[in-house]
Image 1 (cartoon, rainbow, N blue to C red):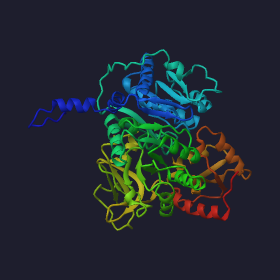
Image 2 (image 1 turned 135 degrees about the vertical axis):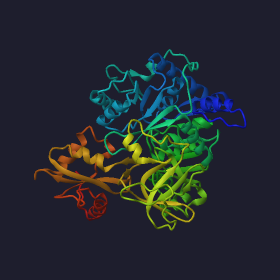
Image 3 (image 1 turned 180 degrees about the vertical axis):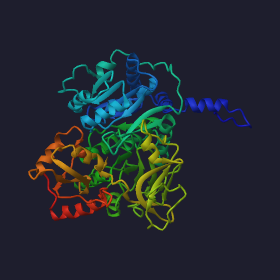
Image 4 (image 1 turned 135 degrees about the horizontal axis):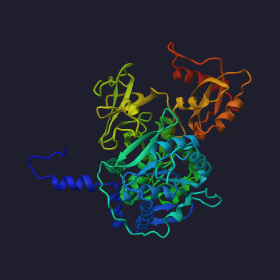
Length: 555
């Protein structure tokens, strides 16, 4: 029921706010204001789109979608790298009322098939480099999309039967703005993100239009970002931190310019900073380390950088001090989730003093540390002491940037969201300034090269091998990735070798490349509780010792 204030006539405000305060309207304002300014640059093809040209490209795409009867609440799935078509797909479906589902192009065929069955997209956009994966996923999926569209770097890739090239799909369609012949509201779902799950099916996170607008405002406010900025993200844009932190969401909403980086290379990245006068650069702490080493060997002019934004892991103090000296004094460190974007933020004035922490709450958010109970959630006000020592669960309040929901997953939704808060499963403590430090996870998630990996999913896949009795996986330190996966295998027969398990992981369609273990050990038993639950924390401690002692082996 719509609230009606007693002291004034609110109807015009309600109609305007609820139906017009959309991300797409923000983008269209920039088309009118900054039509001849660069909106998107693809260095690999030396191509630039102005805001007017980007809009015309998206209009052609939108008209093609309309011709396929893609409309209100239909799904367009994007399985794309950081290519121009990713940006077109981020914008064009909104023009016909469709939902963009952003999927990880690194997923295996089996994982993609499950995701397609779950979301039932009418149209699937995919990059040519994963052509073979898509062909296999199409065979495995019980649901059959109407249209498969191959994008980006098409030379040398044969078009699968029944698929179409993006250029052929959009050609001969009008560049005029399509008529918006559908009802739209700020609570409409417009983007669906995919986050890591404990099974082969990722959790699907619906974001509505006001989430998109306020996520853009959040980045704009905290950087701050303006229409003269030039942004580049070193991470995949399909991630929340990719699209929403210096990516498509805030950049196109404020009228700035986005530089595409298909694959991270420290040398290429530094060259682009100097060439394109990049002002905001986003990436993981591991990418910052590689940038620093490269900059030390062959310095580039980084004077245009107004911000180097990192997410995904805390910054260690020694590393932070080095980055501040070698790269830029303007370093930011954000912490959050796919569901909620970032919710705490370390600004340049916090560093290096608070390096290692994830910082204090963002302007419109609140981050708390609550007590942990085995049989229930703590209430949002059941806090641990602010003594920088007592460990609790980190919870997040950010109604502007989340729908507090999962698509067709009520069990996970009930487990994660409670009374307007997200319960993260992250463990941490906080100080008298309410600055939070993370020191572990209740669910033992592994973060490798910026990708979230759940041990139970990898274990489930390996246990499909009929020569494996059981297994456990955990994380070990890795200089390049932050963490790497180690697998402890209980064989069914004495002839099983590490190579056998490695080959199985290589061939199974249920394990993406980044989820395959790098280290292995054959064991007689696994650490278990008295009730038969796997003790991942105990295995992690043992694995670090085994790695140091040379007990863990590669193929």
